[in-house]
Structure formats: C-alpha cells, structure tokens
Length: 276
View 1 (cartoon, rainbow, N blue to C red):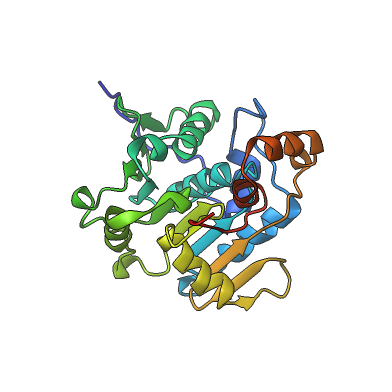
View 2: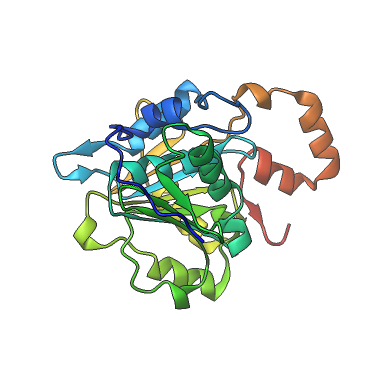
C-alpha cells in the first residue's frame, strides 16, 4: 500500500534550467553520494534546448542524439525530473517501445535519484508497481509503453521518448500521434526524444525528425552538430568526446563483435540501411 505524502515541503527544488538541476540534484549509481557531472558541450546543448522567452519555452521538440554510452538516457531522466519539480500538477510520461524499455534505464535513473537524493526522498511516492512516481507538488511521472489505445487524452507537461530508433510500425505511429502536447500548455511543455541512429526505412519516426530538424534545419552558430528548425531543436552528435569513450581497446573489441553497420550506428551515430 502506498504511503501518503506529507504536507508539501517548502524546500526549493525548482531550478531555472536543467543544467543547474542536474549538477546539483541528479544522483546516479555511477557517482554515489554526489550529483552527476555534464561535459561542457552537453551543458551548452541543454541550455540551448531549454531556452525561454516571455511566452515560455522557445522549442517544443528537443531531439537529443549521441553515440551509445554517452549518458543520454540518464540526461533525459534529469531533464524529466527538472521539469517535474519545476511545474506542479504536471504529467510526465516516459515512453518506451514496450513497458520494460520504458521502465528500464530512464525510469530507473529517476527512481534512483528520488530515493538517494536527501532533498527528495521524503517528498515522493514510488507506487508498488514502480511505474508511477508522485511528487508532493502534484506532478506524476509515469512509465508507459507504445500503446495508443490506453493513452488517448493525455495532457502532458513533458513527453520523454527513450531509444526512439526502435519506434517502428503502426502502433508506434499511432502512439506518436496520440502523444501530443496540449495547446493549453503551450510554452510550458515539451517533447524530449533521445536515441542513437536508427535504420533507414524502418525507424520512420526518428528518420522524419532527423530529416526535418537535422537535415533541413539551420546550423547553430555556437554548438557543433546542433540544428534549429522552427520550434524544434536537435543535437546529433557523431563524436565520442566523453572521457570514458576514449578506451580504444573497448571499441576495438566492439568492432570485432558487431557488424560494421551496427558499430557505426551505435558508436558513431550513423544511420544504417535495412538492406545492410
């Protein structure tokens, strides 16, 4: 049985931007007892994505793509928590290709943080199923699969699609259509899509985002591999620049174990074709 939340705390967990939130509040298993760190380029990317004006968020769709093992899923979890605390009485949805994936790394990272951050642990409820987290500001964070039948009528403040390269087929297309931002929350809500590259002709949702934002967008003058297209912004990094990505022995072994096109897709963030 879920415990009841106590009276909402007045301790502030609201940050103006996701970078400050992650650097101060996002606890992860890899760095026990201290918040996670972000590379300088990752910080600049998140600051650009979360830019606001008097009407709210400038961009309603954020595409965040880096090679495998770039902490992109954990960063997505940090952005989701930032938005959940920033805006009370909200609805945050973590969407995976199935419930196991939706509840995998991104939702697990959120649960780990709220359970290990001393400023959060008494202010949240993790339901018995573990698929829903309730904050004392009235916001809920829910893990859901690609299932358009059960999610019609959602009114989200944040939609987080994890490993979007795997969103394939009619159910995924219908879910993408149903999981839209409400006009009543324009300027206060956004979609965050994280993934590495997909398969041409199969990862159609991600491919459309790539074509519309990265290929057709305007190059950001200050951040490499970042593009802007209307109210969408995208970061499609093909470089392995993080410290733990410099182990050539690891990548040499990966090249031995994977077909060349899969190595390029996962570790160089390059699209592959279904024929390959």
